Amino acid sequence: MAKGMKIRKGDLVQVLSGKDRGKQGRIIEADPGKGRVMVENLNLVKKHRKPRPLKDSSRMGQTQIQPGGVIELTAPLPVSSVMLVCPTCNRPSRVGYEFREDEKGRRVKVRVCKRADCGEVLDR
Image 1: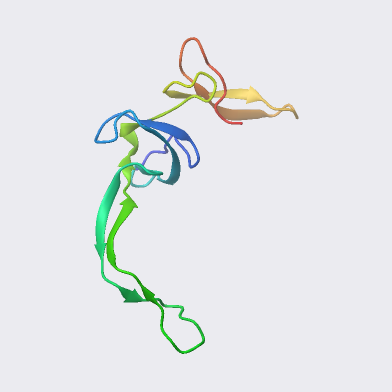
Image 2: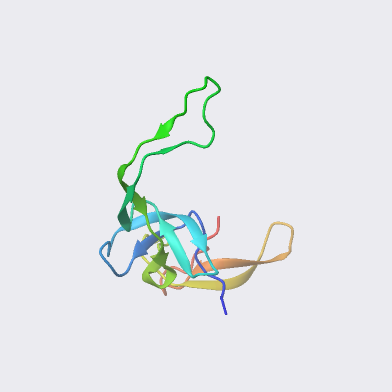
């Protein structure tokens, strides 16, 4: 059921819908099975945490405590609500695939920008 995503970790994307619409950021984590991506510093949610001792405490005998309070975390976004930004034309674009020849003469599948006036390779 899970189909592969055309967006990878490290890609620059633009958010199409939601509270962060129009903002751009890099993908820090991609989950193709769930169809979700995490974009750095976007879709921030507040989480309330209790103070708790760290598992790997110091050898001095005293336990270290992780502080509690309200923490802001990045929440995953659906991959359908983000669009890849082409590094050449600097605009959001759809992603296509082409087979190109590499230096050694082998056929390699690469991602390309689907804008009519661009068509550049997205993988560097």
